[in-house]
Length: 316
Image 1 (cartoon, rainbow, N blue to C red):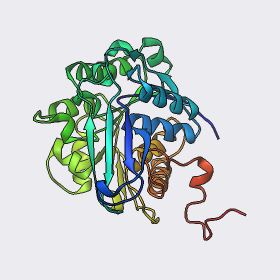
Image 2 (image 1 turned 90 degrees about the vertical axis):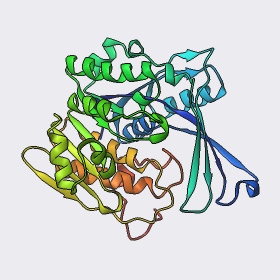
Image 3 (image 1 turned 180 degrees about the vertical axis):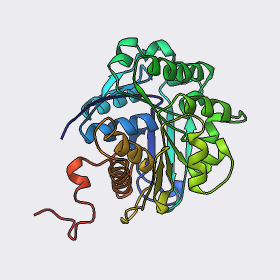
């Protein structure tokens, strides 16, 4: 079923190289090339769930930029990303040391995406959007990206769109700067805020999941979703609090699961579905993403979500 809602995501996407099997880097004989970025991960997951979605960024005029634009369009994502001749597309390397541990190195400083400006998001795109989705990564990229994130949130609200904000805190992006004031400001302009327990505590202090949700609501959003990993999730607004248990799957890679979770929730935004249904789909989407290696490759279609928990994994 296609959702008539139009969602716009804005943020950085980078090329990604990873070793083909776990182990020491010097023993890896082959690497795979892909790409990843929180906002484009969400965009792909939304598109696979039948939602119209646009992704806005900047890309270098290079082969990695070509790959990203091509693959996003192949996933039915509308791409709005000017190409920069004098700036490269960002790049990251994922080293899978074991099946459960790894490190990711980033080359993003001075990238095309770090120069993004609010003018890259045209007013007509915001006026056509029902939801504009941002993360805490975008404002950490540079001063211009920070101004862009805050201005987009303001403009989206003025255009009548809902604002979705996933804190998605990355210490390496912010380096020695304190992001709390920026996060709180964007959260105050948002309709729904997603945060892990540690991320919520960064904004409002330590506490239980219900306490964190209540304090985040005090910042101004209509809804808050606390992502708790293997412990599930908690959704809250001023009228209700809903606990969603995690869905058990055989986990092979958790990267991108949080983005799939957010997409599952937003894919039902603007419909007549209750919070319980949005959380259930979010949990299913996040769980499914854990069963496939890759940042976005494991995003599920609606039909695939329906097969989670099937007694036999093979369709005959």
